[in-house]
Length: 96
Image 1: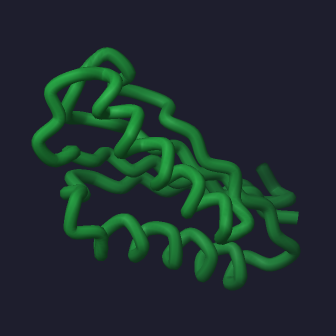
Image 2 (image 1 turned 30 degrees about the horizontal axis):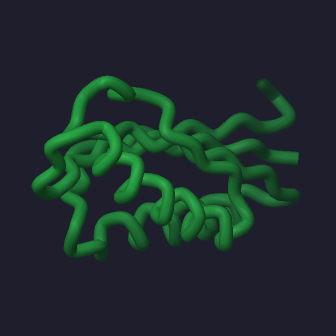
């Protein structure tokens, strides 16, 4: 079994309150869940225009896991209302 973690640092559009931020972040997290991963806002919680999405997935093989995480990353990168600033990825396998 392999576990993958993806951390996506994003800049939100014109957001002026935490309520507006929630209205942008929550639908994105819901969309990510449709890829069969766990997703949550894991950082930058008090800042209006920034967010850190944490994504975790498990799979039987490393290639399939990379494909799933790539799909999530592409989904965020392709959104017009977000700017992807940085991506960090970790894979944990049987030897870890």
